[in-house]
Image (cartoon, rainbow, N blue to C red; front, side, top):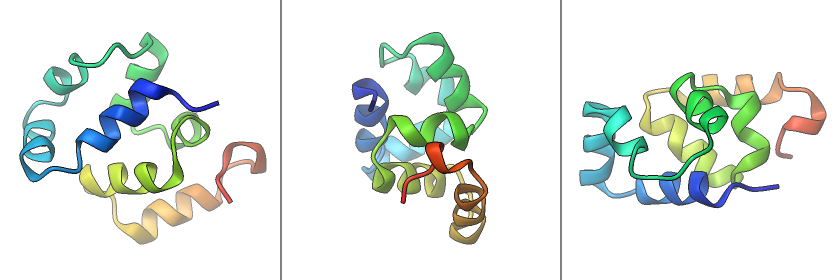
Length: 88
């Protein structure tokens, strides 16, 4: 099941100003969204396995590019997930 607020945050990060703010102070941007504690922790830890089933695959990919993960690394990490947690 997707998480609305997580998806909303990832969607909102698509603007250049928003992504700049996020890169400068992740905690402050995350605090604007009513994320569950475990979701907040997963975002801060860049936990793809936890986040993948909770958000649209395109938003997930964009988010990880925002935080500086290369596309090749993101795809490799996504492919390494157990089948029930990966988008496909």
